Structures are given as structure tokens and as C-alpha cells.
Image (cartoon, rainbow, N blue to C red):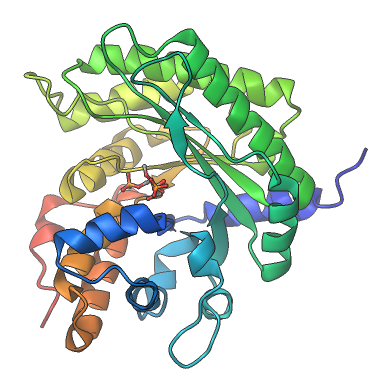
Length: 347
Ligand code: 5MM
């Protein structure tokens, strides 16, 4: 059967990966958003979540660096305090609205310490609703944990199968799927172990995508980087993380995929930019896809800290947010440097 959305999906997938731009992840579920608010003493109300998302989406010039933003179900239904829907704000700024459609990583039966992502039930109908609202891409995150005797083959297979079923439903319904298999940074594992697990995961993800009939040129990949565990005594440097990450992706990701947009996964904001920059500054001639960012914490956290729910801080927090987007935009074309971190933002 011909998919009526083929040309739209192909164009959207490419536009998401526009030169010099990346994707802003702002799809924290209420639980995650509330935990981040609690750390700053912000009341965990729907209105405060709305106000924070308005701060982000109305930040001046954000769309110079951001092609699209991933929203959460609550956020996609919200509006500015003046009553303009967030979808309209994004469309008018030239940012593509995206939506997180998984319902979270849950304990994987019979596999202590491992998770499997849920959300396939009713997904076709939810995709139809989001498309009607104006969303043009979606995101589903699978979580792979490295530990003693894990990940299991079953965990990798179940998560890859879920990602592929989700991606097929998205393409059927006109949304470009972002396929996000995150190998968690948490643990004392080496970068070599992270490479092995990431390679196995990506091989299985693309096998399952093929089996489920997903078109590689109508999707984008959001992987974690190949990196030392956060508690590993020997930490790989920027060059090693960048080169091992690209080596792993070249061995697993078909060139037909338009782009790779990394998650930051708990790396510092500076390291997230430096790793991405090294890939684009030094390895670009090897890359068949565009390589950019889809960070949440590495873009949002400094702005959230500064705002801390104070109305008088909104404009400054927006400048801080846009500065991080700008630095990552520079990294996405290999023009970022540590010196840029010293530029005054609030003058
Ligand atoms: C890994 O998380 C994604 C990227 O964020 P970072 O750059 O901070 O690692 C992010 O899109 C994540 O999927 C959302 O924040 C949603 O998280 P929850 O756990 O609330 O579904």
C-alpha cells in the first residue's frame, strides 16, 4: 500500500536536520519536570510547567538554532498566557512541533534492573490526533542499562521491537519517528563496554526497523554517545568519545537515515557541545548523515536554574537558553570552541 505521507515525511525528516540547527528536547513528562522543579523549590503545578514552556518557546531567535522541539502531551495542549497555542507559536517561529508518544520505561518482567518502554496500545489513534493538532514528528525513548550481566539479549530485542513498531505506526500516520535508544551513562563501565552495548543495540534496532518495514529515509536517530560510565575511574577524552561514537554509528546506521541528533544523557553542557563539535570539525568527511543535537538538560538546565519561577527573570533566562542553543548550533557545524563559553550572555 502506498503511504500518502511519503513526500511530507521525507521533507520533514530533512528539515529537522537543517544545517546549523538541532532539535530541542522539552518533552519531560510531568514526573521528570516536577523533580527538576522540586530541586529549585518551584511549586509543581500545571501553571508553572506551562509558564516554563512558554519561556522556552517564546525565546527570541530560538528558531535560528532550533529546527523543531519535542513536546509532552500536556504541553502540546497548552497556550501562552495570552491564549496563543504553543503549536501556533512554534509554527509562526518556523519550528516544527514534535511529540513524545511513549508512555515511559517500565520494569521489564523477569529481568531485574532492566526496563522496557511502553506505549503501543492506542498509538495509532494518538498519532492521528497529534497530526491533526499540527505535530509533524514524534519521539520514543528506549532505555538500555549497562551493569553486571546486563543488558540481556531479551531487553535489547524487546526495546528494539517496540521502537520499530512505534516507527512504523508514525510513518503510517504522517509523523517522522525519532528513534531514541539510550544506553545509559550510569555505571562504572569502560568506554569499550559502552561501545559493545551501543553497537549491539543499534544493530538490533535497525534489524527490527527493517523487519517492520520502516523507511530509513523518513526517520531520524537519537542515540547516546559512546562514552565512559559516569563512575568509571578512567574517563575517555573528547577525541576518544567523538571518534568511538562515529566509528560505532558508521558500523550500524544506514546512510539513508537523514540525521543523527544526540541526547546529552547527563553529560555536562560543555562536554555535550565539545563532543558534538569534534565530530563535525574533524570527522565530517566520513559522515553520510547530518550529525547534530537533540539535548534537553544540556540546553535547558542553566535557563531553568536562572528562571527559578521568577517572572522578572524570564527575559534573562531566555537569553541563557538561546545562548546554549547557539553554542550547540556552532558545534553542529564544527565551529564551537571553549572560548565561546566565556562570552558574556547577560550584558
Ligand atoms: C534522554 O532524555 C532525552 C534527552 O534529554 P537529555 O539531553 O537531557 O539527556 C529526553 O528527550 C527525555 O526523553 C525527556 O526528557 C523525557 O524524559 P521522561 O523520563 O520524563 O520521559
